[in-house]
Image (cartoon, rainbow, N blue to C red):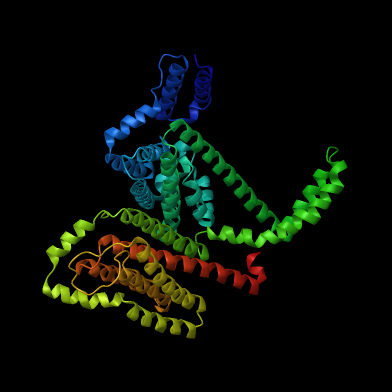
Length: 524
């Protein structure tokens, strides 16, 4: 007999009976099955199998197919609302445990979960966009979503959509429905995707790594996961409380109301003896601290707010996260002196497509990835930006190019990967990463910096997309000409993108702080 489980069965049964008029038929059936399962297990009629042994057997049976299983689970979590029924963290942890057993690799597992989760969120987002508010208003009452609540949610998401996407990724119900609601509330996809990339990456890395590190004891993994969820919930409560307190105290009327409430409470018999000391602490400690923290707190809140600097900052942080992850994973693979996934296939494809005319064209295009060419282009762009008094943009371009050049050559010396044999053009030094691919990212950075001069949104998008395509072609010419592996080129792109994103993030923060000092009221 297991009294705790029998008590849980009774509690679920009471809950089902108390709310039966508000529940649909399917919900009542699921609750009934839950009661039966808890009661049977609590009565000792069945025993759960050894979880560790089951996972070990599962890992050996699945092998590389674990990638497929985890990818499907991560996609269906939001893409098909499976997260409303079963928590997706479980399958992520199981995948990490199997990686810890050595059946699969952790790096590709995180990447697959990350991409699958973003894909599922995107599908759910556009389903919400397609079905819209009418679908929610028609079927929402079954889950207590009324028109009034939907309006409240839409207003909240407009102000704090980024926070919802980032923190909601770790809360099961929110994770399962937030992308759909955000799509139905007409949030633009360009606002949604940067926050989603960051949130999905943190979620994927946390739970898969958790399983990987503690794979010898699955019950410890579950305990750590539950503690993590509790800790996150505590952080969310503290954050929300801090935001509400800030809003209450940021204007004179709100501070007056708070002061009146505090004075009233201090007149209670229990607190009256301590009133002088508490008033002194409030006036000499809490108020000065709150005044000093007001600006930084508001600044941090704005960084996870969709719109303005919050969106720009989150976008560059998403680029930084993706670029850093890809680069580190490729360094790990290449350091083991093995070809990365796709290297041999890219070499074979280049050989099949190679023609004299194609080689001539590639030799011309690849020059646009040389440091001499991108350096001259960057100097011209920096001069133009300085004339336009866009000092921050100019510094980002110049500093990032220099740092990228240094990082590429340091990495080459650390990894020491030989080049492919029989290259068609002269290329000195080690192969990993490709300097030409890293330099090609400069064209994207130039396009982003100069696109503001284009009067129409479609024109800006065309300029940036064109630069991305051009940078991709420049990098791929190195594979076509046989002087780099595909992983060299990918690492060059990733490393340079991460460096440019990091420099842009620093510039955004510094510019914001500088503007606040010039206009102190901006942070109030």
